[in-house]
Length: 211
Image 1: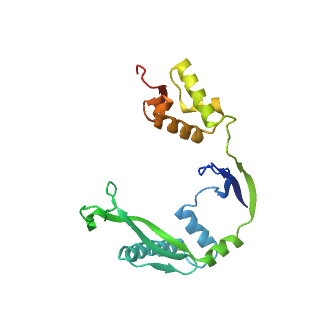
Image 2: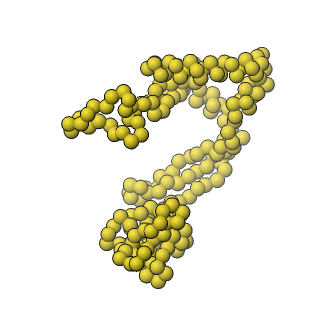
Image 3: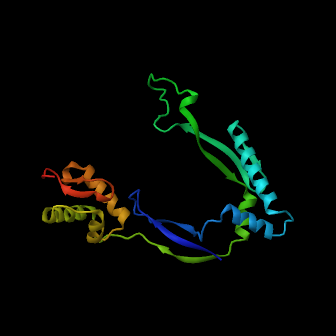
C-alpha cells in the first residue's frame, strides 16, 4: 500500500497564505536487476537475459535518436526530448551586449525531458491504493523577524559566537528557516552580524570584532 505525506511550505511570498503539497512516501528504489526479475516473474514468457537485452537496446537507441535531435514517443510511457544549455561556467549569450556568440563547444545536453503519456498516469493511479502516512508541518517561531534579530544580537554580545543549531533552538525555527534568517541578517550591514568559517564550521559573530 502506497503512503503519502502532507508537507507545508514556507511563506516565501509573505502573503500570509499557507501553502502545502502532498508527497508520495517512497519505500526504496527498485534496481535494474529487481525490475527484470519482476518482469520475468510476471509471466511474460521471456528470460531475464532477453529482458536485459531489450532494455539495453532501448537505452542505446533512445540516446542515439535524442542525440541527433529527434523526440521519441514510447506508447504507454511518454515522449522523450533533449534539453540543452550552456556548459558549466558558461553564461547564456546576451543579445543586448556585444559579446561573442556561443559556439557548439560552449553548449551541451543538460537533461532529458519526459512528457508522460496520460494513459500511463491513469494506469499508475489505478494501481495506487493510497494511505496517509503523516504530516511535515512548518515550525513557526513565536517571535517576529525583528524580535529574532534582537535575540541573535543579544546572544552574540553575551557569548561571542553562535551556530545555526543554537539559533534555531533559541527562536523556535526549523534548521532551514533558521539558516535563511541568519543569511538575511548577514546580508544586512545594519544587523551587525557576520560569519566566520565555512561549511560545518561556520559560526556567526558580531562585526568589527577581533576574529
